[in-house]
Image 1 (cartoon, chains in turn orange, brown):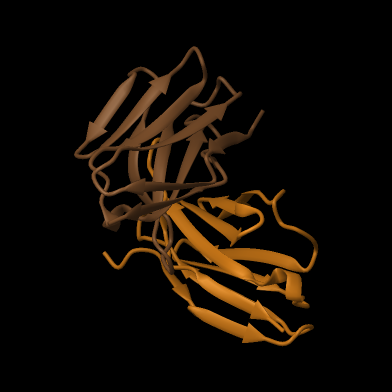
Image 2: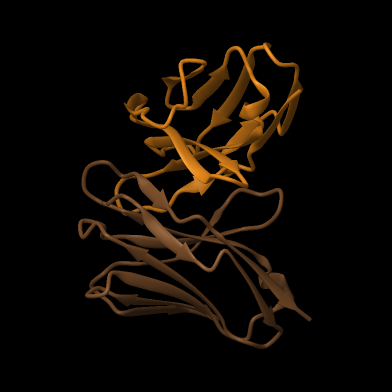
Length: 113
Length: 113
């Protein structure tokens, strides 16, 4: 099992540009989570999906952020337009049902200049 | 009520010593308490987890102690090693329904050789 796969590993973009982060969850896992990690705020849950359906997006900071999960094996997190304060490490995680631990990907380090 | 409060923020322990990280929660509906370990440049990884029907769980040098009445739980690392230097996160989740983990703020642990 390759684990949760995120791409790209690093992204540097200019303010105002669109950024798309990608995630492939572990096959068979039915829950997918997007987190943002910063020194100041720690790990913040942005949005999560159960069976490809968004369940809770209350952590999405503003309308500039959107997430989709078109099928069980792929999800995207898009920021448009990006701002310097969006600079952080973004993690995707997946899990199988209640009582299971999350498996995190290696993250995407986003720098907006 | 959804918060998990973790302390200390950072901890320095000598090699061979005992590292102790504490967490407290308010929501009595939480019934699954995992600990995650994160090395630089990596995503958090599940280390050990406990359910509130037991007061202690041990896996190798890692032990979770759980005090249901005080709504507190802690991670003990016995015979701490330099390779244990990492950031540790406690978390809590309601197994039924939302399946959403609430994370503590993290503890940066440094083991001095």
